[in-house]
Image 1: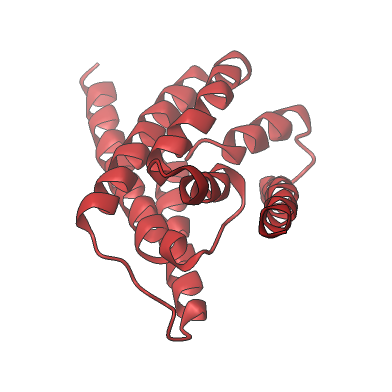
Image 2: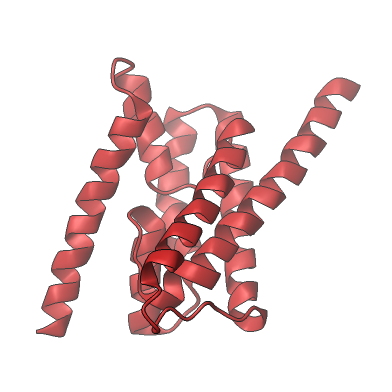
Length: 178
């Protein structure tokens, strides 16, 4: 019992760190420089630009149905940890919008913003995955597809899902500019 409680404490501390790093990458580098990553985060950035709520709020709202589906199709421990991580990402991202300045890449350093933002998000995702958590969104869908098709690599599934989302983001963006 003690070992399990200790493990949960360590897991939660690492999930807090993972969510903080991920959120800072989104807020500091990605969102202010109009870089829309794939998945729920990318959709949330676009929605925040159009409708004005915080990016974190949209991350939470878009994740609610996916988390519910995940509870039916995936491991409960993974989904509880994912739910905690999604709430932490929401809180940290929206708090960062209020208190943390952003990196402005309008001087031509968009590649720097993309690299550092992507790296921060990747570190956050990796830390979460290491503790049997996800950032929600397409990660949940990836795990569901991976469970149904164990012959497919999770990275491949994630790339396909994010590619589909990114193509839709581009299509919507073009329609909005027209």
